[in-house]
Image (cartoon, rainbow, N blue to C red; front, top):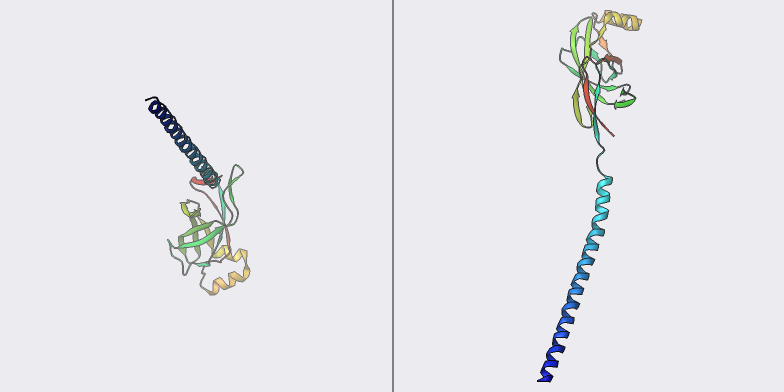
Amino acid sequence: MIDSQIHRKVWLAVAAAGLLTVAGCSNKATNEAAATTKKAATPKAVSVSSKAPQPTTMVTVPKGTAISATVGQTLASNKSHVGDTFAARLSTPVQVEGKTVIPKGAKVVGRVVKVKSQEMKVTLASVELHGKSYELETNSVAQSAKNQAKNNPKDSAQAKDKKDVTTLPAQSRLSFKLAKSVIIPVKG
């Protein structure tokens, strides 16, 4: 009977030691798994935060701001119609409080608003930034046969030959003013 009590105590001690060993290994494995997971997660978190988009601020470009654009195609009073659009690019950046809101070279769309044989008026309709289009309302700029005669006597002779057709040559630089303020998103 003493033998069986000793045997039982030894067996309980071995069983307890075995359980503690298993528990210790299990805890070690859990700690190692947690450390590995933490190490694996850390670089991902860093790379995600380094690729985070820059914050966007909405900036109001005030009414009266000058906008200079270069026309991308020749417009003529005998071919253009009211409502026709044309492509242009900003000749100079648009800045508000020293910060560039619309960069030089930004795509703009112009619109023909008046056509007569001796006069043509155009305005800017929109600007494209970051893949989105923003409406613009500007004053209209007129080109007339009289303006052409003053600017270039050779054009004056050609205009008379073409029955006073008014042209606005490609690469013409036009200056507009915003008739209404516009809100533009600026990154950074």
